[in-house]
Length: 330
Image (cartoon, rainbow, N blue to C red; front, side, top):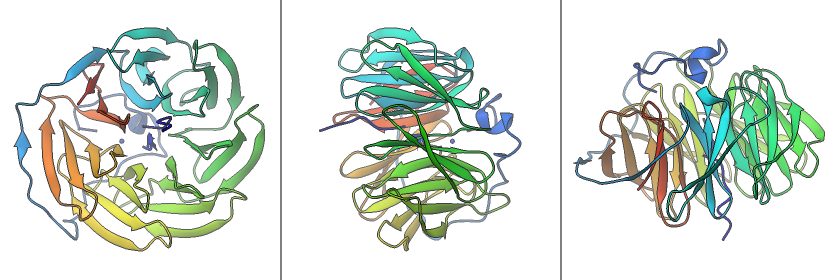
């Protein structure tokens, strides 16, 4: 199994993504990606129980970690405020190295099987690093506000600017095409055939745009919650974390039909799928929901830390704790 994945950061990654106490976040640094006020209650609300006794393995990384990616063995961390990425061995948490990204304010990460791609927010480019040793293989100009990236098996997809996403050939970084999506795209996810772009929107509602990966044809645009950020695919459905109204939206990937909107407390940011359940990062906690019906299984207290990037490595959930500059293994 290949766990090379983004954190929309998965991106996500990712996807994608903070408590009001957090300063100098990518959202606050960008006039395009401003976050609206909270909206009204979601369509569906589920009770939850808080788990305040859980212990986590914690590894110190750089300042303000956001995006993350796995290369099958190691975790890669985008250290936004340190202009670097860290490589962490997942089995024991050893930091194997810290590397330059070819730009400043690294934000989103994705793995293409051999290399790590990182979006540099302030430099308007993406860097390509060899996963084996962190060597910078190249940088590629993108445009303003490059977000959390996606990989489709051959190409890297980078949301950027006010309403665009770019397709880069992973082998050499060649610019294959640029496509128009919704307003303020911030993250992307791949469902095996199509790219889903999360559009942060303006005002109370955001959207996702579905493009065919082979040629970029837009197959649909679907409304989700307010200020959507992270995105994840569960094998059949797309899940979107909506920070603005504290919900996650579940859409059927085949046609974009909304299967539910579920209440998630504390500012959902990133989102990941573990093969059974959906995990959502956010302000001060991580929430676990049943993928089948959106019922909250548990909420894990992170002891005052807001969480950003989140991903599953096949055995454990990893989540960034922004203010503490650490990554925790759950």
